[in-house]
Amino acid sequence: MGGKSSELRVRRAHCLGGEISVPGDKSISHRAVMFASLADGDCRIEGFLPSEDCLATVAAMRSLGVSIDVLEQSSLGPECLLVHGRGMVTEVPPGDIDCGNSGTTMRLMSGILAGQGFASRLVGDESLSKRPMGRVIRPLSDMGADIKAEGTGGGAPLAIRGSRLQGIRYELPVASAQVKSAVLLAGLFAEGLTTVIQPVETRDHTERMLNSFKVRTRTEGREISIAGGQKIQSCDFVVPGDISSASFWLVAASVFPGSQLKINNVGLNPTRSGVLEVLIGMGANITSSVVNDDGGEKVGDITVCGEGLNGIEISGGIVANIIDELPILAVAAALAEGTTMIRDAGELRVKETDRIAAVAKNLQAMGADIEEFDDGMRISGGKKLHGACIESYGDHRIAMAFAIAGLFADGDTVIENADCIAVSYPGFERDLEVLSSGVKKEQEEGGADSAG
Ligand code: S3P
Image: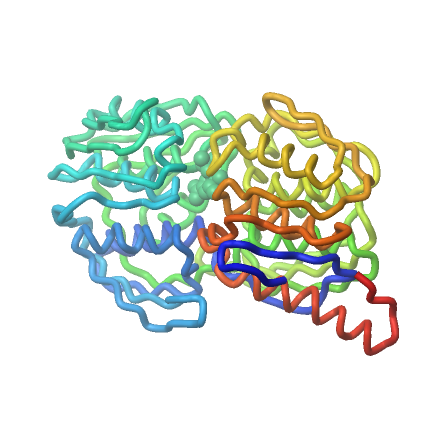
């Protein structure tokens, strides 16, 4: 591992193992900062993910007049925050609110800002400016919001003129936790009841965390309702490790025969843990045990013994659960025996980059056999991978997925534009080094073959 600051060079490894904790959950960190900012007093947030995306949310809430202190700073950044909630009161921001690369910041903030008594403007980087925002603008407009997409193609910047909102009943056309959350948050500031109907279950951190902050929501099957005018009561919150970050190591350890890996303190929310189900379906030897259920989120430890993987069919309702893990699962499929089919995953085309095209192009560059579909891909596993120059397309999950592929390839794999990894996993390179080279050293000491 090494290279220029924006370049990550990865060499073949032979095993991956050890015991780690991954940084805090990204989705939960965003929500913790937003809800704590709206709460009626001080909230301590431990295990906050100090990634660029989540720091954009901290900056956004600060620009609305919320004071947020850093109580503990690790080498990765601020991991313990004290948020001085202002009881649903926000101030006119001094300028544009920059959401950076973060779709979660932009979409959830649009829900909050739609119901405030002032105008605001949300801007984002090049990637975020290309992402679809009509999916939040439509339901929020139905509630009475005044939001204009100023970007070409109906995207950011979003100019929001705060309005009096009315509760609605809204059937989501896409399975999106971000859209669901934006509508529920707007519903908190609206008159009457707001109900969102999801096509399939999506991550439910918003509902769980609102309940922890003593806001009532009602879930009945695919319908979630919230009554407007409720107050958010302050509470302390501990953010578990991010299962999406853990999934990179789960895949690598599952494929290397003989690997032994333990990841502690990972969020095991059932609407996010589908990656475990898929890997076990591929033959992985993975066990998980819940050690804590405080704050409404299941948290536990995961152990993996490397035994290799087989192909699998992935489609239907599970796709929303594993949407962020599909790039690394596609890499897992290339390293597995047999064929993997991924369908119903068209949403991957509107993530930080077109993840179907990026995965297909990069896997092909490394010698894998992959066919691309509108809504997925077919991967024939077991082909020998070789190092290549990999374009991250500025997408953190593409960069990390292919750093893992590089551990299994002949020759060097160079991930270009690897800085984007800091969007969700600061410290990834360090963990990669520790988990792969520590094992190599042990093997060398034990006399095992360590030729690269
Ligand atoms: C997220 C929801 C998902 C996911 C994203 C984070 C969230 O997006 O891909 O990384 O925090 O709610 P969609 O809800 O748009 O599918």
